[in-house]
Image (cartoon, rainbow, N blue to C red; front, side, top):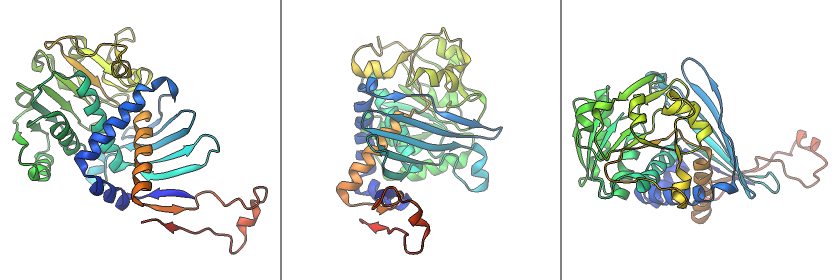
Length: 348
């Protein structure tokens, strides 16, 4: 049987663990797997692009487990009452190929994205960072804000979005965290002024320049999340040239990240090497660091194994017969006859 975790189950899991605790635990799980980088069979995601969006498959495996995620990115979806990003994923055992978990990953992707941002900032941002600018106040924004507030000590966030309704939504959702001061900025430049950390998480599929060199101050850490497919950027190329840039999986980031604007000779540093202690991260307090985050399959692997372990421990989800029973593994045809359908067993 395969455990199935749908949206209501994922919501119950988040509430049971607590959203801020879950973000911290997920960041630890992702870091644990990044440090074991060499153990994984990795590849850039397979993408099907159109003029209005992208649909992707993201696979990764090690000797024990295989994982993949189906995910889309369609910025115009919100005009139709649909989410920009939706996802689901599978975790299977390598020994038999048997699927252990089929899970929603729309909510979980938002959690793993902010957890990855947190993981990078713990390694790269200046110590004692307290102020963050959050550019783009859509579906990912609250998760980013909570990750940095609850786990890194950010207590003031300046927020900006070209859509004032998105900022209204963010402020409303975060009102239950009174220790976090949120300031509505009049522009991107206004928001980033004096920030220790700048997070860009915009959605338009365009070669945008959300951050320009005149906005960058010494010592900033830039968490560039929104530039995540060919033809989609957020940073002016000169911002990158003046900074030290860190990436998840270079072959993928060269195609999809903000560094797609630069020649392949432009030097970048693998984040996993910093986490493993084989490369330095920030070299001094005045250095500008950029995490050119595009999202990598290993983060989804970590998320799926975390979700499976938590759901097993808490009795959440249902077990479904995703693969036919094998009373006689040479007789598949019997499942075409009446009475051969499997059952669903609820575990929560």
